[in-house]
Length: 156
Image 1 (tube, helix red, strand yellow):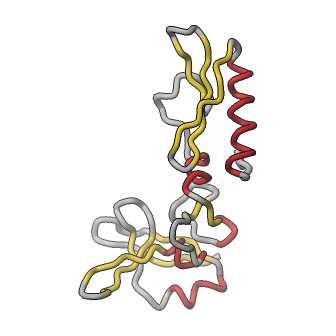
Image 2 (image 1 turned 180 degrees about the vertical axis):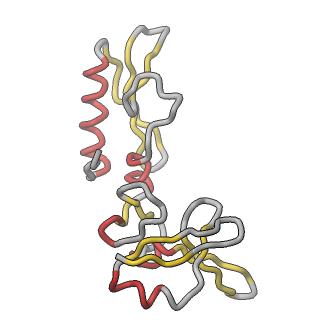
């Protein structure tokens, strides 16, 4: 593992991690930390400024695909920490919102019904999974649906 300096005046003393075998090739360009936290470099294309994200560059990510940073560290661009995923798969992997009151992803309490509702988002469409008396049943419905629809496993 090696470090590439991506410091800018706004973000001094910042480095991104890369594999030894990628270091020399990647280090030939000037990379910087973008405001969204990712490592990128700028190029001119057709008279317009375009940004190349390091993680997408390393993984040769195709259009309509995304790169998941498995450990959620946007500056860890080692191949073992990156995987190409669909947008739906990537959304499953993001941390729960602080506003989540059930403590479970895809499950919320329906006050009027006095029951737990399970939903999953697939290709930016919400799918209703059911209404349950027990939170455990709603969680099971959501988790089973994740395995079916997203075909990935969560590391945590």
